[in-house]
Image (tube, rainbow, N blue to C red; front, side, top):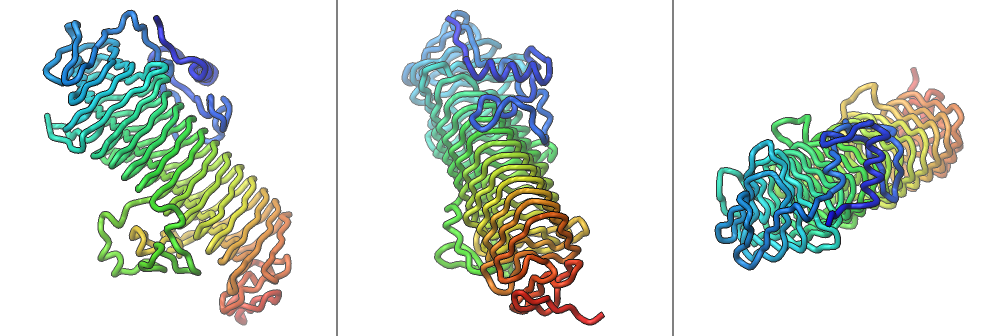
Length: 551
């Protein structure tokens, strides 16, 4: 009887044909938002990753012919199989040739090893399989061109490690599923992975997931791909001692990419929930992410903030840097990409001890629904940040949206911030803090690239700092801004460069008039008190022009 994954696969394959016109094993294409509640099959408006060859037809379908599969019956401390391509020694089952292998039953202390030719494709179908390895990986893909782990429809499967890894060869095996090869997880069944030591799933090449239901409890990373992680669909409940989903190649910084087209993700991580050293792109999905102790673990008061229950607040100090330990420096962000960062859609609920969304390079958010609570910045970008659309509800943060530059085309923004609502920073910014994870102040290149441009959107911002603060120019071409500055010494609008309003509707609820030339800084801090928007010197009472030194 032929088993197949239906419904979503048809949608994904149609998307492949529409966008690429390709088929066959090497086919791949843009399947962004396909089959998810958070999007459609339309092409993404922004791209950080080449999607043309991420998923093959075989990745997506998860099919197999049971009548042609080689059956392996697991039984206690051993197994049974009559195929020449399978050798069994105690609890170790070794597969040496290309083919489809159907595994069922329980292996109480053993291991499935794939050691085939480097041109072979091996498909392991888990059909009610329960495998425990006391001292190594339950599934070890040592050699092959590609290994598929397919979850048979309607089956429940379990893989686990006993809490330690003892070397069996020159490879550092440290995961319940450990692959030196490309690895694909697919199918429509369920898989529970328990890793009291090490990671849940590791591929030292590309990790692809296109379907299935996964419950992963891992001491380290939940899912880890060295060259890339690409997820088309699936349901994921991940609890991890480090990152929930992690992509990193320390040997080649152009790799370590991460792409998600859809799926549902409930991740509780002591590191980052989703982390990529390389480019990161999300085109859809439903995300419920929680990192560290969540935003509630960080107590904010003015410009000083740190962990609840004490600790060093405020800025980074040299002494803190000297005493920082590796354990202290754990990153606890919601979604982090160290290179290009793109989100084209999805539903995101993130409660993180550090930034909710963090980009080490340029960031583009084309659309999505974001409910964010952060112990630091809700959205942080070290370079140019562009928001084309989306709905952003930010209830708790240090700074709401921060980048070297910020360009907003449209969207709905409801931001409550302990410091600035929107901040375009140059040099060292006060965001980031010592004493909690040893995080330094955010660093930006001090250049003329710092600016805020608002072309549209609806903004409701309540801030203890400035509502909108640019260390360069501030230009408002459209949109409605309802700005409430709830702390003395700060203003609704503040910029160091030129201020221009070409048609935006600005309501400033800080006692100042709806005129940037009249917005006082107060409390000794300069406001936007000159017609060209230059920061005034010495501050001013609300509603009065900020004082400017004599020329």
